[in-house]
Amino acid sequence: MSSWFSVKAPISDSARSHLVRVYALLTAGVVVASIASLADMYFFHSGGTFTALIGAIMFAGARMTPVTKFDYTAVWLFLGAAGFEGMSISPIMHTALIYYPTALSEAALVSLAVFASFSVAAIFARRREFFYLSGVIGTVSLILFFGSILNLFLRTQMLYNMQVYMGLGVLTLYVLVDTQVMIERYETCGNENFVRPACDLFSDLIGVFIRILIILMRKSSEQPKQRNSHEHHRRTSYSQRS
Image 1 (cartoon, one colour):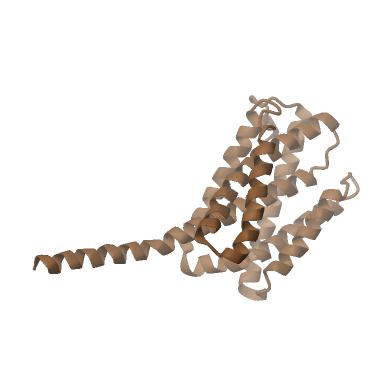
Image 2 (cartoon, helix red, strand yellow):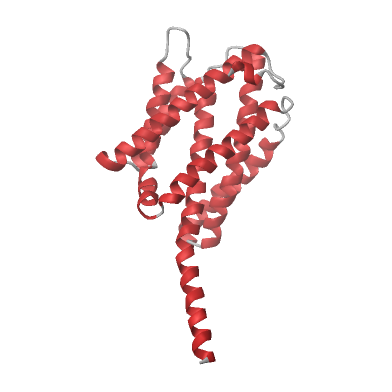
């Protein structure tokens, strides 16, 4: 895999090895989150805000704990956090599995495709090329934050749609920026904790997956209504002609 990065990517050999460790840990985190989500879905039924909070605390610990050859505390914190995050999204995944099973599989595939595409774009782009997006992301994120608070009182569909669609756009940009920040930090410091960027990219991937799943679930729920509307219109037109 390290040799794959060396095709055209403008990064050093040690940075390529760093990327391999980051994405290997990220893959392990996704596997753990998937298993934890399925386990909670069928056995525990305890996923929600509390498990998301525990996951966030463990992620914070993983980001701050240094990882050396003899200390893998941060790795285990990351995997534990991934498990709790997987449990926290199990309710929406359970709903999708029951009512919109195709949306769940499509969301997983689309999320992986989007994440992989933006990651590759960031890796093979010139160093620091996407750093300018940080200001745009920060501004839009602030707007979304205040919009979410406002929607707690207004409960409007427009603000909700803004949270979903604009949030998806922001998270895809975060994939670009976080990937280049990870590379630049390692190229500059040389001893970057590989767990820290794995935490950032894991959060980006989960956020992208949830928003794509919500969009696909909504489209799947609207299809029967559209079919019924077309059928009603067809019958009405037929009765009028008769």
